[in-house]
Image (cartoon, rainbow, N blue to C red; front, side, top):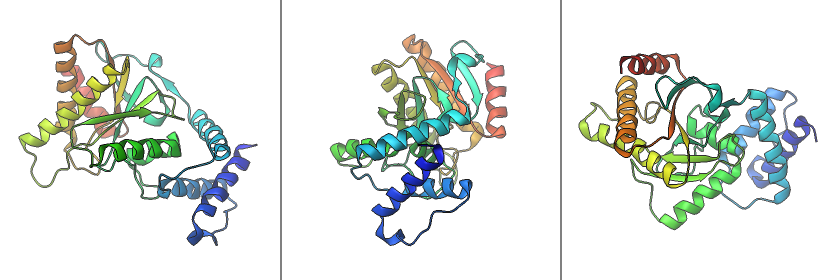
Length: 259
């Protein structure tokens, strides 16, 4: 199958699952097809899926990521020993694990084509990721606590694992408890990564988007927590601070220079 044929197959299969959308016609333009497919991925509940669907989906997503351009950890220059700063799409980063800024349901973002990292990671990992998270949450029987972490395979992403953590949501003024909870996100991910044998991990800017943690303070907490963890545990895990906005890149660059 060509990439176009795969995309149309996936759209058709997902529309059939949703009788209320049976009247939707597949658009003729490639970009509109991609937008529709992502929307359908985003709203799909964690339900069983056929092996045929997974085979087509996996081939499609892996080709989409390949076309975006995969960046390997070995391609990056360290900002400090064992610490890297990289501005780019975390779903195209090849390392042992990437961190997802999740919500407390841990099922990914259900808002069609939303711009959050949770949406992007679940979209390009494939429907298996939501199924895996649903299994974890069913076993846990309660929402994920802020500052903790869970680990799943990464499925179609170029990394091996995804670590899911729920950062603090800021309402009004920032307080010490918020900073402690954010630091706990970083520590929990590092501990879980090493328990699972990961040698490298890429952190997104946890809590700075929809959760409104101030960017400069979040970066300070991130760097301080990672460095303290590495010093106290003598860990050699390589850490990438992944940013997507120029604002965050400049903040991290200055903080890493100052140390």
